[in-house]
Image 1 (cartoon, rainbow, N blue to C red):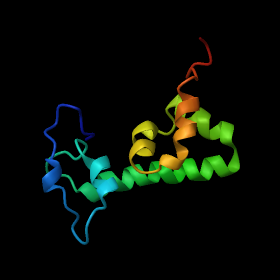
Image 2: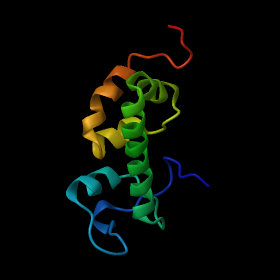
Image 3: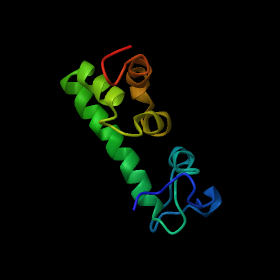
Length: 104
């Protein structure tokens, strides 16, 4: 089941990977995102996959990448970009002006 906003979150000082360490940027992204009992690496991986999708799409077609953010095809793009792949911030900014249903 998907985590909801009401699920208790793991405090940031308790977020540790099974092996190695998280960078400061990764810990900041994970803050208030890791439900208690969930592996923080899984949450981080989801965010990184979002960044990877954006990187792939923007190479193929910038407008498609922006459209995928607008329509929600790439969920949580705004948060992933802000925390993990800031090089895509312009895509998120442009998507903010889009309308998912094509109307305004």
